[in-house]
Length: 411
Image 1 (cartoon, rainbow, N blue to C red):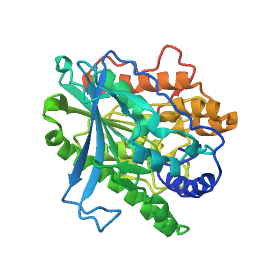
Image 2: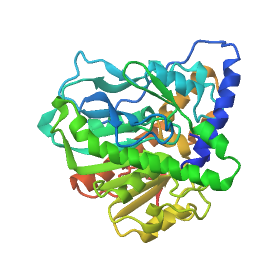
Image 3: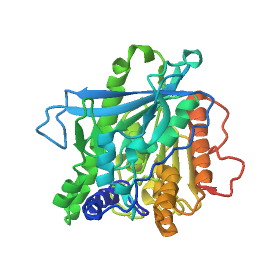
Image 4: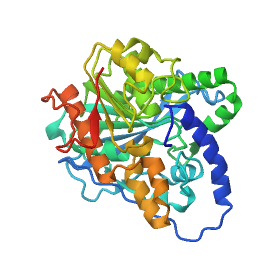
């Protein structure tokens, strides 16, 4: 999550650069204890349960590590729970994932090794019994930004589940900083090494971007194939697979709309600040994805950081012009690229406890008040899927009463 990052390329570069800074930081003695962080409670009426699952695609050799004859993924499933008493709150990151994130991440000027990432708890309770009285529930999948773990979308995923959705967050193995599998095995990102091999050849970089998104879309489509049968027995029948949506941040937003273009099972998609072309900057022209060049015939939502809209992001403009389905768009005043991740809640706490300058907060998550940003994102996302998957009355982009912090756009 950097202040200026295209959907994939800048993220890959950021991860590569942060690997160097992490090695430098690890050589510096710690002067204080590691900061512990909290996440905001969800706003819906339901308590939330969660399970984590390992999925194995035996039909596909791993595209990043060809020696592995199959593709292996980890997912988290969140759902409205009947009761959560005695069920522990799930960690945001497992120990191996936390160590990987501390070593390599996309944060700007943040000493990540001084944060206890494994101490943060979500508001989802492990193995809680599902509430079937309000089911079957619409399903929404989540894909994170390039180099980011699925756990950085916890604030929005927990909230959607508390509003009656089954939410499936997907880690893209060897893309995400670190993925921990059952038994404790951890697989770390290969993107920095891949970027080093491609740079500075622009054609090779473009090919890497195409591969990154293609792998993510293939992961998503396999997830949709495999998950109905892979769910634990107690959750089967809870998801309504005929009401399926997807959202994501940055490269995850790109993934959501590209997967929607390629797979008719996805009925609605939301993209949080993900450019839809294989370019270095959001405003660069050319190298459009097929979703941007051909458009969509189903509903989608674009949400940009401050300044990202149809006039400044050519791939968004192309998507909008070539689409025949319902479409909505807005940008948040004062928002930055990482505003649409858990860092909106976590970074102010880090800055306070580690005495970081305000500049560090602003360059990561902008100037928008964190509480306002989180409230607006949740309302916007929930209203979009409520309308498109549940058929509830259209309320526009779903902004709360004070619309001064957001600007809607249209073509």
